[in-house]
Image (cartoon, rainbow, N blue to C red):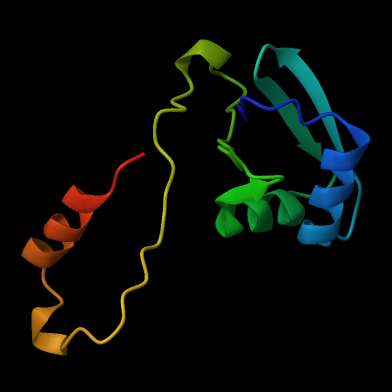
Length: 109
């Protein structure tokens, strides 16, 4: 997981615990500047965190990625993060790829 914000602080960890409501504890270790590793005791907890992302803690976007045991950290892609864009009042016949591309072109980060 990479962030421009130091997450291994009591305030940040308390915020994560409150939002995540996990069955078991988790541990955070900062391993490089803007990079921390989260360790979950239960696979189910880790899965629910990854399925529920993106996470915004104290106005900082947290980009969490799984780190396979056979990959060095530098090979993990932190350039993308999945988002769900919710739109209202679009007629069913207008829910098409072309309109999705038009909405995407309006997004700026």
